[in-house]
Amino acid sequence: MNNTSEQVPVTVLTGFLGAGKTTLLNRILTEQHGKRYAVIVNEFGEQGIDNDLVVDADEEVFEMNNGCICCTVRGDLIRILGGLMKRADKLDAIIVETTGLADPAPVAQTFFVDDKISERYELDGIITVVDAKNIIQHVEEEKPEGIENESVEQIAFADKILLNKTDLVDEDELLNVEKQIKIINGFAP
Image 1 (cartoon, rainbow, N blue to C red):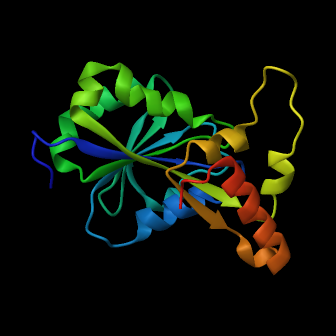
Image 2: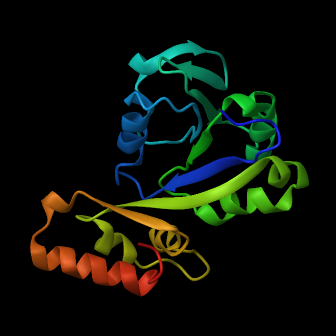
Image 3: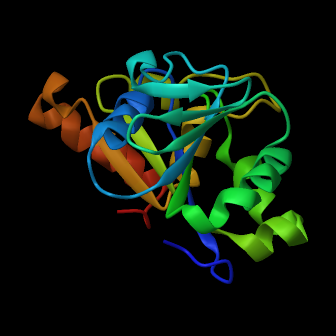
């Protein structure tokens, strides 16, 4: 467990609608890995955390049956992280799942703009889950001037990219998807 002098690592989990973020998160929460995570989920998620995993719930914070603590973002992320500081010494890490339409930049900036947050928490990384079957249409989608393409932003800000649903595309499509991802972000594995 962390002692109070260590920063708690925070991983941002992002990806476009239907990419598989919540499925991955539910898998992490059901594994018996011995880690104590706090999970902050955006309330606008297209699929929620499996209710069968919930042990104790109040309005914003609920505990999972494997000891993980979850929060829903109904307010300000800084406020929720501030509230988790009381439990930080009991946490191994925090996972922030963004909505599928989120630009991860403002979430990442949270860990640099507030002194108390940056003192207690460390942005460990941004993992983007990419749907191999549908990502090309999302990346190529025309947006009005001044409106950013969320799927491009999510890939661009990623430290790691998890390519999901590869079984739904053939080898040529998969090579094209990987090529397009590398054009947007050539640094993330």
